[in-house]
Length: 344
Image 1: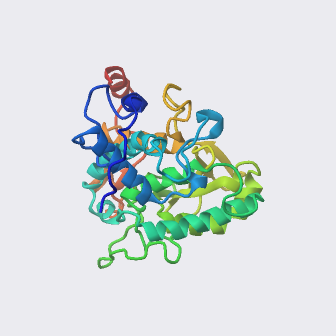
Image 2: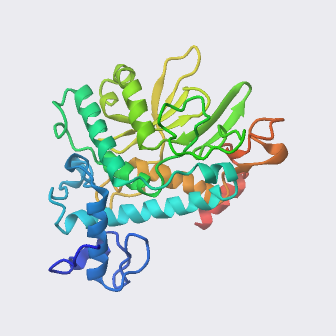
């Protein structure tokens, strides 16, 4: 049953905090206009409780940027008000990605159902223990705020990553419940996209919570050696389906997304994978963190046609009709891209 309405309506400044234009109906967690501000707030409060985000991972943003975080009991206006604009951005990005995935049966079939609360709570506990243990933070609940975990919860609340059991980099239990049809290949169905260059094959899938935990446990010591400062707080979020040579990770302190590039003969390195924030007007410079900007940038590019599917004779791997998938090489000329940006 939905939670009862709060005793008081949400603050009058709700619209200015990212819910929508002043005077416009406030949206609920599904993006649709709620009948009243009270109903909208009740719905957001219900979602906040359902997500079951640990206080260490509260969606308040880094303390140094935002200054305050939602109270731990989850019953204050601040927690749902911080959640609302982030959830709406996640919904918009997922809507665009789902529309694109519909053009590729393998990709559409690979999208996992929403992450359930019990599965999340088990994985969240494992991640907190892993992160705080390697960092020397003294266990769960110790150490700095980790809002990146809260943002990952929002992303997985729509789809718990991808279920691609036939990939070379799938770990035991990661794709549990996947529907396997005949001999269909699925390594080219990475939602984050792919390409080929000589004998280099890339198709990057979005990890679900089990894959993130398993890969974090496997790579934790190496990440710590690679970057002693960031390494303890990095959680894998996307990985090449063919071989572990391209990996995307979320810094759960700053919410930045970084990619790990490991080429033969060159040392592994980390680099930022998303554009900087457009402004510092909302919630300081954090504004939902790099994880949402990374997801929004990918969704925007497939939505406006800068990126798209390679099918038929133009498959990702020449002469392989099974290699249909999202191509990370731009499909539009630079001139057309500039015109679209100017018109936006």
